[in-house]
Length: 396
Ligand SMILES: Nc1ncnc2c1ncn2[C@@H]1O[C@H](COP(=O)(O)OP(=O)(O)OP(=O)(O)O)[C@@H](O)[C@H]1O
Ligand SMILES: [Mg+2]
Image 1: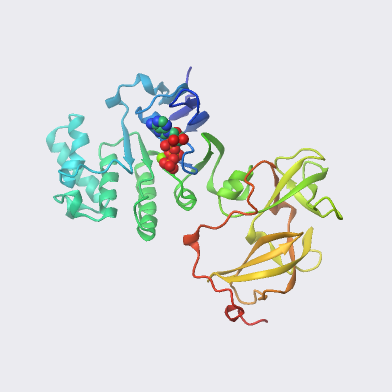
Image 2: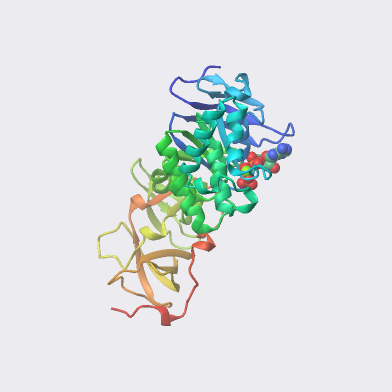
């Protein structure tokens, strides 16, 4: 098997089984051009670390082949692979100072002593740890240790850096700072990056492209914008950001739009107009995905193809936006986000309102994805919840 010339790294139909029958990674295909920052994103156990370990040469694929600069990784001697790694569990050597830790990969590559000192100084400066050269890891904060580990992965000027949840142990504020720092360093050095996280915000903030994984496979790989705006599957639609999901059946279809009955089958049909992503004919079951922030509250007449009466069940004040739990088309909770801006038109629980959304903001996806009614926002993104009507802004 030969790798495509333009790919710096290529996974070609890679599979991995640890036990001979279950697949940790399955039919995994990924091409990374030089200098790109690609993130593997997915829930625990979906195979992210396994992919990284196979590229690093710590594990071997049981199917397919991995190429580095056009050569099968397995055929490149370990010390010639020139891969920097930061794994969460691979801490710094505790008995060595920071400078000694950084010197280690250089000495292992038989770099002359004088050059080692210069490279270590430069790498420490890069992560703003110049004053910490003589500290032992145990004498530094978690964030400083992780910065030192990143410097150690970069100090020998690797062709590619692999990072596996490097910020997992840090608190949120430090994590965000480090995300920015890693991205800035990667761009400045032009180094190719394969990064692993299960935090979608982190993946979105740092990456050129994100590969969303589930059960050993890539579900979709695209830029953060495309993943958010054009999810191709229910798994992606609910894993990246938040989506309301409505189960239905296609009653009319053409390539630009379809009509979907989301009624319960017993009463009158309830027709929603949607953009067909994963349906291509009448009669097919589908899940419609509608982002909470793309739902308009009491829209002007005639401005939206989809307009339905809804009941407000609850209103949660989130600071910069209001979060409405509504019941629409017999479904609850159907979430609506309204920006907290002047004239946003406040509502109260119990109110009857109209909700509207565009055909293009209503994506008809596969029917077989996640069964939950909608995907909840991560808890840490929430401010303390106040549901009483006292927190509702004055009506106007
Ligand atoms: N050494 C091993 N022996 C047997 N099974 C393994 C081994 N390492 C991983 N697995 C299994 O392979 C699957 C993928 O594991 P992997 O560590 O790649 O997941 P992950 O996406 O990195 O998860 P996490 O987010 O929890 O780190 C899991 O089902 C896991 O139990
Ligand atoms: Mg892992």
